[in-house]
Figure 1 (tube, rainbow, N blue to C red):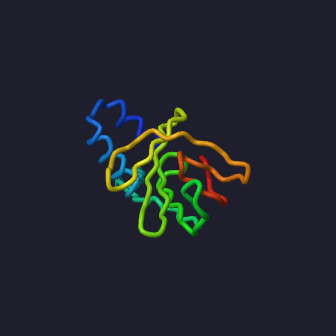
Figure 2 (figure 1 turned 45 degrees about the vertical axis):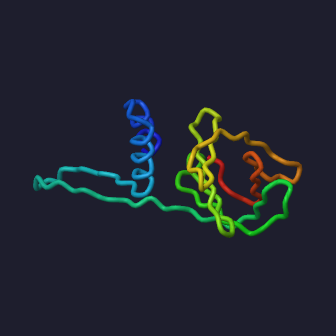
Figure 3 (figure 1 turned 90 degrees about the vertical axis):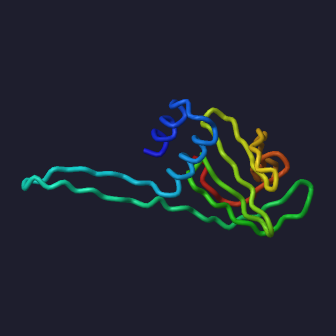
Length: 136
């Protein structure tokens, strides 16, 4: 459902800022409308709230030391962030293999290469995460 909503927003041709806002709003509160007509002619609507996953990991800025961090997953394989002491780094993946990273204070999204290290850490540019987390 989320993937279909995202694709609809992208196909809409809306400016990047509008698409970003719609995407964040859609992930912040996933509303599933389940409409059904009962025998009495009534209509029911249900609302489901998307769960944000928080996974404790070890992170580092290459070649620095490993430190405790938290991966916050908004949409598995699509939108996540790493929360390190004093900062948050946001990531997004468009489904084609392109990953972008946003680091305050610039606020700009920049393409970043992904790679696995020998110690089985996943890195995006100079930022690496080590631990068990879902990829898709």
